[in-house]
Image (cartoon, rainbow, N blue to C red; front, side, top):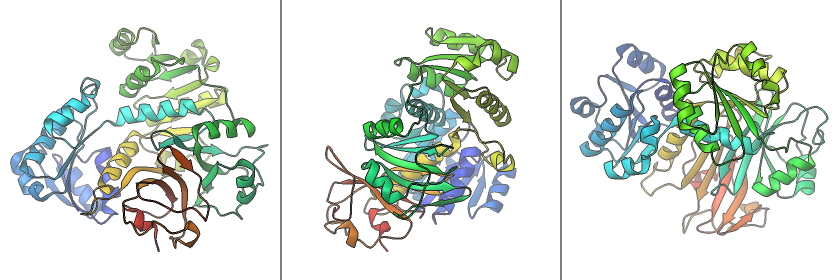
Length: 450
């Protein structure tokens, strides 16, 4: 596929890395010649220096023949104008990153009236992920499939866990509809078999229906007490969207924001929340605001190092749910003894959304990827496919379906029915199937076959 990307910032760089590996023809447009040269040296792409919203620049980039046009610069207005122009020039699909809350309140209208295929907002997506983690306070990460009916959550096997030493075969016999999809053990990630055993320190990814997972967490002594209060440091866009989501819940948020004007704005927008004008990176301030009394702590400043230090402090002070926003997760590989609980990376979240969009349009027949998540440090992909009529995977018992290695068919959604499949089950047209694999670049259900 020919893909044109406007903007070589954090998201643009992730997209170049992700999409180049999937054998696409990529052209990057950015005003900064240093960025363009660096990206061309780093990835197998073409580069053009210029304004992505310029007609002449888009013509030079070959937008008229582009399958997908992605506008992910730092400026919302540039992205919207560039996407509209690209559609008029001839790009088949256009995607624009829009971050401003004023635009986000009318995304559907903007998208439909201006002909943009997809509008994405990394901060809004990050806030949604934090909101989902609040539902499962014992989980390190949470993803949802099948219209939120099926969850994929990450758990850490801590000392004294009743799961230590349990084989996956015994796990299934004991917990039935809960499935261990992947295990991360130190730097190794693998799709387990029935003979695999759970060990202390493992990070396991389990899937199941919402009610079944809630029951499982109670049985296995994970935290089940709901989050009722949260302390948030940093009142930026993510905090804004999160506060908006929390309005209809029983969770009471307190935000500490260093900028007085921003703190005043948030207090006006969200009168039921508590907004404090102070420096949330000051440990004395955190103690004054009684950090230890909160069920959850979320660090959302614009500086990774600050967020990391704040999260470590909150964890040491005994806050049971700590969520950290990180742009550069490579820092964690340097700091071996620092192990934050839940990491939120907006640029990776939005890159995953765009990669899912690209995968779903990766062949002329129309692919059937409906959802895509990366877990275990992006080493595992969890995909939701819709089974087309006459697909080669239909009508064959799963035990006889010759699939690739390191792959698991986790769930089948058939109408209103959730099926935890065994070897006798078969895939049928219109099913939605959740596949978990360490393989990469699946864009059609037939890609699971050997």
